[in-house]
Image (cartoon, rainbow, N blue to C red):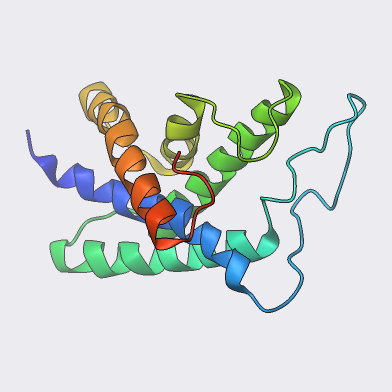
Length: 159
């Protein structure tokens, strides 16, 4: 098996991580859900999902993808991978709000897989074995990246 498909995850991981950099923009951030509260009294997504984070995440994930894919001649679309990752993360936030979890609370499995499943849904032309490998390694990489992000100060929680 050729494992070059593992490079495909780089834009998804970068986009998911880079979206947190929006907390450093020098202006008020704008939530993707425009503050919409649903009939259950909870926000659609919450203040953590912003247009600034979406833009930064997609931009940096796409750039990372082109940097990695071009030398190897890989045919993947880093823009779709990055966008899919952040849309998947938003679906995860939607699910967390519906079950009553406040922003920042952990949701094991969902927190580790929502973004990669979104990326796979939007841009993942893989075999079942390749998809399984991506899904199996993601929680390990995601956990390590979150701990690093927490210790360098870009994440508020280590999960």
